[in-house]
Image (cartoon, rainbow, N blue to C red; front, side, top):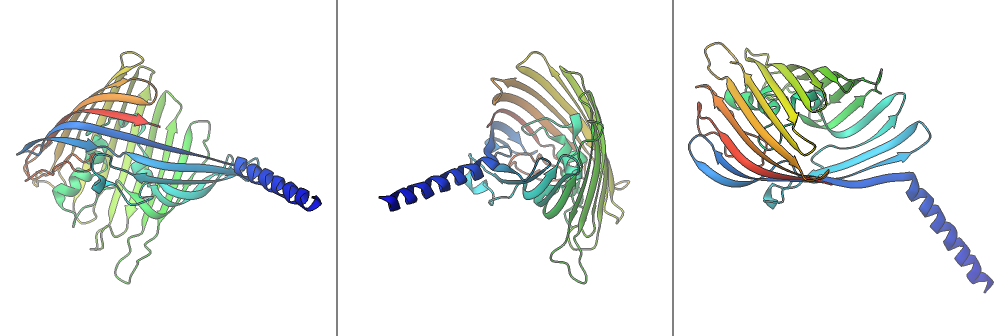
Length: 351
């Protein structure tokens, strides 16, 4: 009987220890399912499509080591409820482990967005196919127009990255640094990537600058460099922002790009949004510029579920072949000078 009591006491102590350990680590599941029904046109063929817009599932946690220091982690994976073939490899989105302090900032290692990609301010924010920052300012449209062998976009979520974010200074300013080494570096190839940004956001005004340098963008000897600026305001019901960038492949191709975005909340549920933008020619006479426009109306059913309608169109110059890129399988423009467009209805459920 005494032996049994000892066993029960030990089991109780282990249970309490386990409970205390579990309580010291806070973690939660989160995600987003964002699907739309679209009428699309690649410049030649009209289609009706069910499209997935970066749906994802993740788990994140924080373990407090002391009053000022915490260990943090996150594992996030892209999913495609409409087409399982487009679901991604595990941890393909921002996934990391790191240390966070209130006084020194946060250091992460893993897969993470570079500062150039992350800088948006109030110049972003459109859903569905309406994210013109990706196509124009971050260079996905120019990459297609000029050719992957000669130009890369600077929308980069890098693997093997070391990322630092400073604490917030003056309750408004954050600096970021990121370094992704080339683990496959050879005597003739070095794909190391550097990035940095400084952002200001006091709730009413926001702005920032970011740079990125891809030393050997795709292993054929050109270095992609980019500079990006954002400026905007948030006045409650009304917000607006502008983002401009210059992308340079160090081999004679350089684009100047701009996107202007505005949003107005008619009431607590209905918000109207619009973006206009363009990418300039990469070299005089190539006619590879791209113009874009996007319009959206959001209706928030509650804090987690929003329905939305959108229309987006790209106008390609005669030497450009920009394509809408927000969904998994939007049909690529069939030839230079074709103008892809999409009209759709979507539902976003965030949990």
